[in-house]
Amino acid sequence: MLFAPFQLGPHRLRNRVVLAPMTRNRAGPGNVVQPMTATYYAQRASAGLLVTEATQVSETGVGYPNTPGIHTSEQVAGWRQVTEAVHAADGRIFLQLWHAGRISHPALQPGGALPVAPSAVAPAGEVMTYEGVKPFLTPRALETTEIPVVVECFARGAANARAAGFDGVEIHAANGYLIDQFLRDGTNRRTDAYGGSVANRARFLLEVTEAVCGAWEPGRVGVRLSPLNAFNSMADSDPAATFGYAAAALRSFGLAYLHVVEASVGPDGVVPQAFDYRALKSGFGSPYMANGAYTRARAEAVLAEERADFVSFGALFLANPDLPARLERNGPCNAPDPSTFYGGDERGYTDYPTLA
Image 1 (cartoon, rainbow, N blue to C red):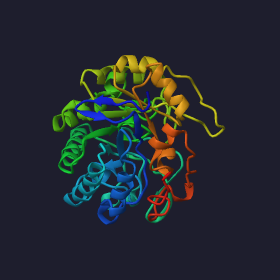
Image 2: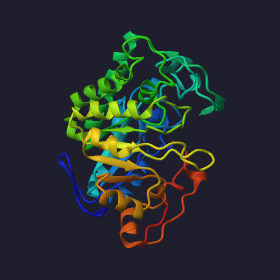
Image 3: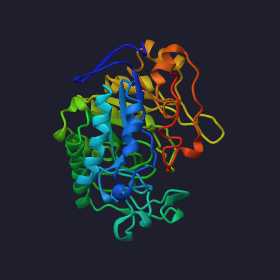
């Protein structure tokens, strides 16, 4: 089933293999993607669908150096080269819309301002900036009146993605960034309409989704969630209730898909708790995209069990531009080089060999 076609909204995907969004930190000045980015994505166009690296919707949304944006005309023009290259290779590509929230630093923010978040709760650890590694600081809690402005940034980013020629967009509500920070009670301590109950904490996600669906028909909009991912100091007291509510609420939009980061492996290599992803899929409906260190065998199994409709692959696809062919033929795979994951030039980016 992994290599069978799939109808995703208006798009007929050639297979169920998806390129997962992966930050590569290779944007140039002005957070504009470089020509090598067009090569990178076009090389992987044999996937049923490509989802781009996280792309900030505003200047305040940046979380790391050299990540691309979608809020200026120059950024739109840069991404247009990417979509043209992918379409020339008969591929389909969605842009992932992103705001990092508290996972940032004044050194990355306009005017050296504090990053924003739902609440003034600092993450543990350090962040990379253009000036080197710096400790995270306590973010500034967004005022209630500021939240519609951030929602509008997502809407504008979605409209810009359309102008850049993308086939759709994915809302990044996972991995400890701004929307996820609103969702989980470990980071959301608000007492207004955006905090407290799960319905209130999900309000920001639903408002962003509604706004993005104003720029795109819902069948071209996906959402990514990560119920158990502890990355970026994230936690929730009742993930099943929080994400079950979010998935069921998203169902009413008629979205293209729900993309779920299923793995949450701790430093000891152990998944800390169980989660009923089948119930999450049932609450949302279909299509459902699974993610989480999948192999071909696990991917085929989850499709056969009808627990997912397609599967996204991360590091494996990073190192194997022709991954669908390798999986289908049970061919050998290149090993990823972690030293080239973030930043740099074409090395470890566009120079991984294909089977041919």
